[in-house]
Length: 360
Image: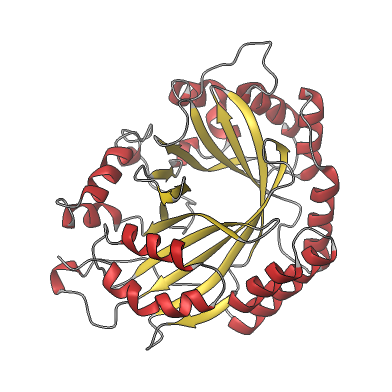
C-alpha cells in the first residue's frame, strides 16, 4: 500500500523554506505521516506556539465526515489507523449518531491530532467529536441530559474546587436565559496520551460580556484586556460575529484548568489576496501590541497563502489563532496552519473516496 510520506516528500523542501519547520521536526513529521495511506486528497494541519519564538507543537489530519470510516477500512494493517479506530470507539455519542439527522452541522472535517512531546510525535491520537443535533445547544438538551451523556468523562467536581465545569455551564445558561444569544457545542476532544481525566470542549456563541461575568462569578482569572482588544479589532475590520467567540475549555477531572479564545478564523476567505492581506494586517497588529516578534510576524505573513511542491501539489494556508485567556494557558498564543495536499500521480482507483469540497 502506498503511504502518504511519498507525496509529503515532494513538498518537504518548500515547507522547510517557509520557516514553519526546522529540519529535525520536518523529518520526524515525515516519519509519522508514513503511517497513513495515500489518498487522492489530504488535509493536514500544524499547530504552533508563537512566543517567544515559533515552535511546532503538534499536527493532525482532517477527514470528511463520510471519509474516515473508509480510510480506516483501507488501512487495517497500519498500526496508526488501528489506534485511531480505538480512539474513535470512545465516542460518547456513538449510539446517538445513527438516530438523528445532522441538521445545522458545520462543514469542518473530523480531526485527528498528535502532540509533539519529548522530541517526537506521540502515537496516541487525539480525536475531536462533533455533537449530534439534540446535544448541540445548551437550551435544547439542558444540563441534566448533557451530564447524563458526558458525566463519566466530565464528573462533578468537589464544591471546594475552583472552576467546576458543570457550575460554569449552569452560570452561563442562567445568564443567557431569555437573551438574544445562546451558547452551543462545537467539538469534544479526547486523547489517551493526555493525563487521565483530560477533556476539551469547544463552545460557540458566548459573548465576551457573558464570559467575563461567569468567570468573575466563579472567581476565575480572565484576561479582559486581550479579549476586549481582539473583539475591537475584529469589529473594526467588519468581521461577522465578532462579538461571539469560539471558546476552548480544557478540563481535568471535572475542573476547568484553562480557557482559550479561537479567533480570528481566516478559512472562510476564499480570495487568496484578501486572505494574505488580512493575515498580514493581523500579524502586524499582534507585533505592534508586543504579542509576537517581528520575525514570527514575518514568517506567518509570508506563509499564510502559499503553494508548495514541484508541481504545486500542496497549498499552505493560515487558518486561525488561539489566545489563552484564563488559567494554565493565560498569555499563550498559538496559530494553526492547514495544508491541502494532492499526490502528483493519481491514487489507485480502489482508494478513490468521496471527499468534502476543498474550500479553503
